[in-house]
Image (cartoon, rainbow, N blue to C red):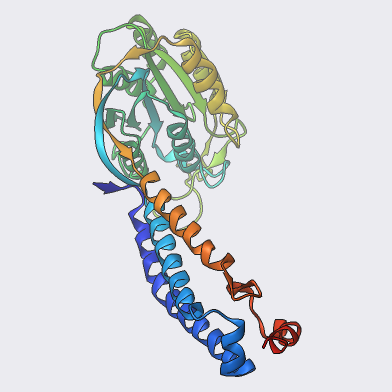
Length: 357
């Protein structure tokens, strides 16, 4: 037996003070009625079982609350096995972590914007395997292909510009490393999402894109940054910007032309990163999810627990119905409702009661 929402058991602590208040309130009500009309008149107006009925109503309320609370905790017992076949596309996300990604032409900076984009993409994925490749002057697999998006998010959080000591932007090496990360020779259901500012410093990007096309991999590119360029912050955190040997501030610019050629070479597509999810929807929902053939991954067996909350709702309703019987039960010849007797009502009742022999 297990519970789907065990944290709700903490509400049981609220039952104890509430029951105390309810018992105290009923006793106070009973004493006020007796004090208002006296013992003799009270015995004429109210049935002898009135005090006992108040006790029964309190007990019924307590059990109603208890069974409803147990139902809300979603008790589960008994299970059955269910076979699930995963179907989707293998996606490798190649993320540029070079120092140029620290430029702040996109707030808070290019790298943080890219990481947020990847996090949003993980929220969109439905059954696709995803992996991460980080690159600068060289590249390595940060997260192998997985269906565990939570694990991929943990690896994503750990990425920063200090991850790779060799600086530069080797897009060609990143594409080759991404192709190897697929670990399969199937020429379908494979896509690389390259996120970078496009400043390739090795000149091998287009050649690597051709090699990816030959093994059936499509490359989709997302450009991070602006074409007008932005200065690079000093990596030593002393303030100011990086300068070249001539004392000029170094600008890093978005190279859209290179990124467009890479995607065109593999029949992919290019988009520039924008605020919101339009760029991700264009690449993943409109391109990858719609156009790439899905494949079946290894099936898995899941234990499906049976929900049994209804077993507790039924007795709760019975106790509630039983309690309502005391609220509507007529006492004495005047058919007074026990739950609705207030001192103000006795002004109208006294004349009737005193007229009795």
